[in-house]
Length: 236
Image (cartoon, rainbow, N blue to C red; front, side):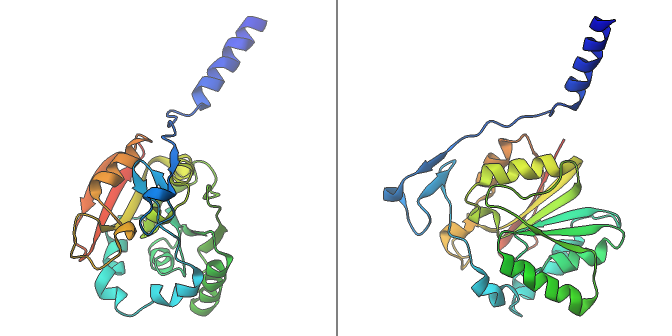
């Protein structure tokens, strides 16, 4: 009888164990190699500095509509009304509230490490009456989202600033439901004509390489935006 119980317990452990465990590629701190970034490198990419809350006005600039086409981005996410979506590096909520309108029976987890940004989001909630946006205080190495809790995550011009990209994507991977998707919007690093500093751009090749660590499936790249890639990865 005892052996039977042990076999059952072992089966339960196996059934709930993670299907995939990523191996950390490691970080290299090399100030002598720094260009305009932090001097910390991940998979041969120098990590950029974070844009502070003092520049929140730039996130809401009127020309952003033409430059980044946020409504088209959200429309191309293929969301269902009851989806739970994490907006990672949500900033002032520029995308969070657009997404919230498409998930009336779901919600948006607006994750940011800066309390000042989360305060801006709370102010907007009061102003526009959208209650399905929930601010989440993230950490530099943890999005602070429960396991198996989200249908999708979006990062708009944010991932390249993460000081701990491995830990952040690992947290997102665990938070995604099976079949869940991550949407990356990053300025095209392959295109010298994009008027953004080099460390605030990423090439498609680099993003695919870094997501490959987690076994995320590169599903598609939508290149309808003037300056950015919209890359889609799926948890299989």
